[in-house]
Each structure stands twice: as structure tokens, then as C-alpha cells.
Image 1 (cartoon, rainbow, N blue to C red):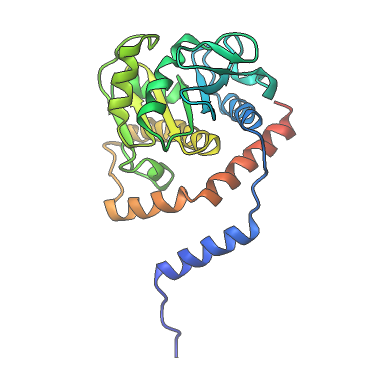
Image 2: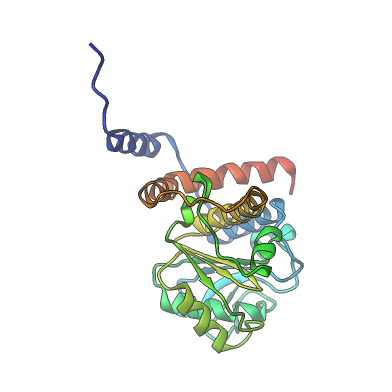
Length: 255
């Protein structure tokens, strides 16, 4: 007699338990994780001169760590991160923050659950936002953004003032990611690893969407299946295991 089919929940719970047992994330300082995230972004073609930004919440109220202005993602080291206060004044380290990181202050203030932010003008997302198009979740690798990616349809201009922070943080709401029309994207994660993971998959999703358009309209993944995949692919063990793999790639390439 054939064995009865077991419910998917059984396999989900088993995989989660076994991942906790067998996957052991590398412990890094915040600055080390930020530096690796920068080099991962560079390795995946996401640099755009000095336009991109990365930050991580500091233990000091209203403060965060960010790459000192003037450096690109590909040359970031742990020593290149400075801690800035509520008016972007440097409180630890030397140098200045990118003035466009001011809107990060507003996101951190509105979202206590967010501990890291990445903003980039990556090539495929830039093409998508130039067309003023939101993301369509039409394939499994896009599902981390299912019901978790906002869309700001109107560009408020270079985000170096407070009003842009208000607009972007309000548009982001309670989601982890946002596509900014005529601009780029932002990921807001519970950790540096999660923000970097979302950033890499955001660029892949935009590339996939634009390529698939050549074959006609995209067909969204059914909601219940997209939600299931969203929750599975954002398990901390998968996120951190993937980040560690990308770190090893960066180390191997010497990037």
C-alpha cells in the first residue's frame, strides 16, 4: 500500500528545524556585515557612482552607521563606516555621510523593526522605474516581494531634505521594500543580511520582469502560493545562509 501523502506543513517544519541545526551563520560586526553587503552589491552590478546608500541602525537613539561619503560600494571596508547622529553629524569615525541618507532617519523613526536600509539605482530597477512600473510578482524568486513591496509613483526629487523622508517613509508603510518611480529602490530589513538579500533579489526581479515583457503580459503567482513562498524564502536561516554564500563568493573573487 502506498504511504499517505503528508501535508506541506510537515516538510516546512522539518526543513526549518534541520536548517537551524545544520546552518550556522558567520558572526560579524555590523561594520563587517555592511562592508560585505557593499561588495555584494558591487559584485551584482548595483553600483551607480556615489548614488547608492547603505546604513544600519546604531545603539545610540536616532543614529546609524553608514559608508562615509566619497567611497563606492566596491571599495568599502569595515573601517570605512561612520556613525552619524540625528542631523547627520558624524559622532564616530571621520568623514561625512552621503547627504541623501537623510531620509533613512525617517524610516528608522517610523519603523522600529527596521535595522538596516539599502538604497540603489541598479540597472534593471532603474529601467523599471524609468517606465514608472511597479513590480509584478510572477515567478518564485520574486515572491519575497509579494504584498511586501510598496510603490511611490511620484519622485519628490533628490532626497536631501526632510520632506522626502516623510514621503518615502509613509509610502513604505509596513513593507520591507519600495520601488521609487524615476529613482531606484529601497530595502528595509531587520538586519543587514536581510536588506542585502532583498536588494539582490530586487534587481533580479526587475530584470526578470523586463525580459518577460517581451513575451506578453505577466501572469502573477496566485496569492496563496506567493505568500507561502514569501514566508519560506524569508526564513532567517535561508537569508543568512545565502548572505554567507555571497560573502564567500566575494572573498573568492577578491572583490
